Structure formats: structure tokens, C-alpha cells
Image 1 (cartoon, helix red, strand yellow):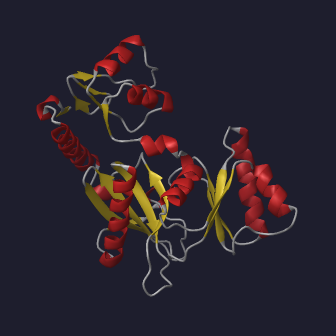
Image 2 (cartoon, rainbow, N blue to C red):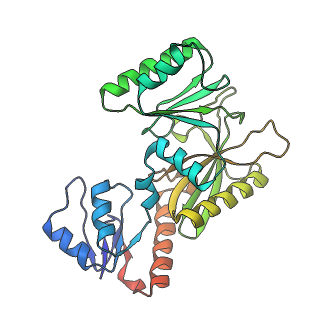
Length: 285
């Protein structure tokens, strides 16, 4: 029996949880399932219940929960030997203040970046140029701490002129495109802040990022995610550096939501075929 928790894909049995917790009937179906299709939004307890059932799971979110947040991802890049900007991890704001404010030092060469652990799309990302911008970033992190967010990373700034390369993994396919600044001097670049999507610029660098994304997928078994890379464009032959992994990501750069779901459906079909399960059991709704 194939069980789907994804709202856009029907199967032998489909459950749309929304914000509801799992109940005993849901758990019975999970234990009965041979394969489970997961939604993008899910909690650790739900994922653990699915993994403990022994069913095949798609997507594979093992690394998502083993290495959570930006702190976790930086550890994953380190553990698997993936190239990334030098990064320091801070579980508490007080730890950073004790080490650097008391000694009036910086953890990196200026400018550098501070990134809140759990925010996405450049929310909670700060470019630190001097003591004033550091103070502003720390003040904002202090406010976030009161709402339950405390961890963050500090990271080398890479001279990319605001250009970020995204590689989207969906099953066997990897699609790349640039998020480029829409104004001169823009450093922190996201689609939500008006970044220009460019599928054609620097195909040589796109090919390098695709290769690194494929290597990550092979080593970690991540099969649905958006990987952001940065290149030091001041170098003659820049290499891709891993910035972060987004498991819940926008679809504009892929051609829209309908195109994304078609790609996801094909990935599910490939997964079912490899497992020897009935491809006709899953339908787009």
C-alpha cells in the first residue's frame, strides 16, 4: 500500500494533515504502508513515525532532521567535506558577546555575514562592515531570542557581487539558475526581494554547481531540495561554495508551481519504478 501525506498527490490512501497531529488511525496506516510520499512541510515527530515504520519514503529527509538549520547544515558540509565559506556556529548570543565584544575583535575579516539559524530567504541575514552594523545585527538577534530563536552562524563574505547560484534537486533531475541583484551594490539577493532570475548567465559556473549538487545528492541521498551556492568572482577560476540547503523553496525559477509538481510527479514515478511498486497508484490531484 502506498500512502500519501502530500496534498497534491493521491495514492492508495491519502491523508492531508495540515496542522493536525497524528492520531492512532494515521499511525496504523503508516505502519501498514510499503511506501510513503511526504509533504514539504512536516515536523520531526511526524518524520520519525514514518521512518520507524520501515516504509520507503520520498522525499528523503534524513539530513534535514539530522542537520537542522544553518548551524546543522554547516556541520553537514564539514562532515561530508563539501566546500563552503568559513563558518562559526553560535548556540547562544552570550557566547559570541563574551568572546568578541569583550575583546573588541571580529570572528572574520570584514565584511562578514551573520545569519540567524532558522530563517529563510535572507531574513535574519546581516552584512557586518563595522562595529555599528555589528551592534545593529546583535540587537536584532536579541529581539529574535525573546521569541525563541537563539542560535546563529557567522560566515566569511564571498565576493560574488550579489550573484547566488541555485541548484534544485528533484529526484534524478538537477536544474540550475542564478538569483542576480536588481540594483547596483545589492549584496543580499533573494527572489522575495526582487532578484532577477537568470538561467543563461555563466553556464560554466552553472555546470560546476550542478556537479557539486549531484555529488551532495549521491553522498547524502537528498533528493528534493534547493541548494544555494556562492562563487568568488574575483578569482579567475571560481569554484562553487555551499551556502545553504532549502527543503521548502519557491518555484518561480523552475517555471512555476505547475511545472514543479510535474517534476515532482516524475520523480515519484522513478522512485516507485525502482522500488518495484505500482506506478499507477499515485496521481496528481
